[in-house]
Length: 437
Ligand SMILES: *Cc1c(COP(=O)(O)O)cnc(C)c1O
Ligand SMILES: [Zn+2]
Image (tube, rainbow, N blue to C red; front, side, top):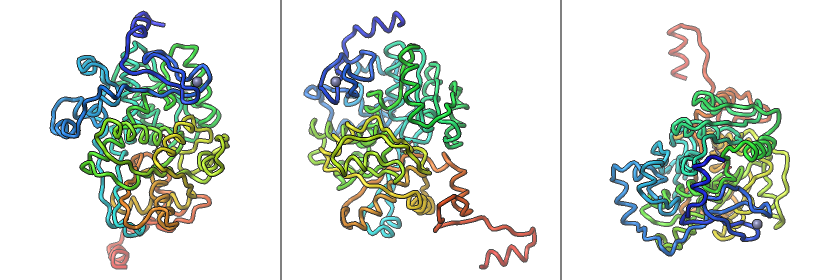
């Protein structure tokens, strides 16, 4: 343990950590990811002192302060309330967040909704919402004096960590499941200079190994078991509300893999409600892939989550043992939430719709739209309800899958919306014929 770390650990933070199972509390800067009882931890803020208002948040939209320009640090009092003077020095920010909320009338009509918006988290600096959690995780790593950070990842977490670690002069180490990571994401981890370790195993194996290594090697773990990552991701919900001029949608819908993101959105919205910035809450729908559905199964049975061996084309949600399942269920209960599942074919067809609308997103993101479609057809989401879907990652993350889909070459997928390239000879008459067809 470094000297500066020991010094910081004794410092007081205005928040504390609390176990999701037994409620035991720990000081805010203690280096731990789990309780003695093995439960995961939440960051608990003292919201009684929070004086943040809508007016102040709206004022920050026009500010040039780098903290205000970030769609995460704009909400800093609710995320990591360190003194402003410290944050100005250490915040590892690339201006993450401030992503587009697209109004999508064409897509809405196809699905049978009057109002559908898509919050495109693929527009973050490294192409996924992971940047929102990472800016906070890496900032905390700097604050407590860590020199190396690590994560296990299906891809986007490693892409994000590699970038933010490089930006901050920290050593980044990523553990990825061998051969199971989308090329765009692997490229990013390598390009940003992270030490990239490919494990012979799946995400769940990589996750178990990285936790052990971090414990013994003095490396800071920035998977979503890290509660500060969750704090940053809360800003997706904050921003959706601010984008809608603080009008509350009926539903927020997003995919669920390790379940950190829905945990974050519900925690954040409940806190926004507690400080009086909003006066009602949306409902939450979490969409899982059929082959990676442990939350869906647990939610329906009312029992504890049982790990499964995950299999889905949507690699970002191919997780069989989600670390945040308890927190996720807690949030779902408080937000009158629901969980549903969709097939890989439904995910890819929904993706083709989102892509062809000119927006585009990676496969896991489009579980959102496939899920909305299912919930509308089942009458759970009503046609006149206002729905916001979260698109979690960029269309270019997984180009191989996109091309294979449009060539109708994906095993077990019937590409209903294929747009295959048309081969012609270099002959003007033939090209004319093709164009006129
Ligand atoms: C990480 C990720 C998810 C899953 O989010 P969880 O917090 O693990 O549930 C979904 N889509 C994309 C693109 C991701 O990168
Ligand atoms: Zn505990």
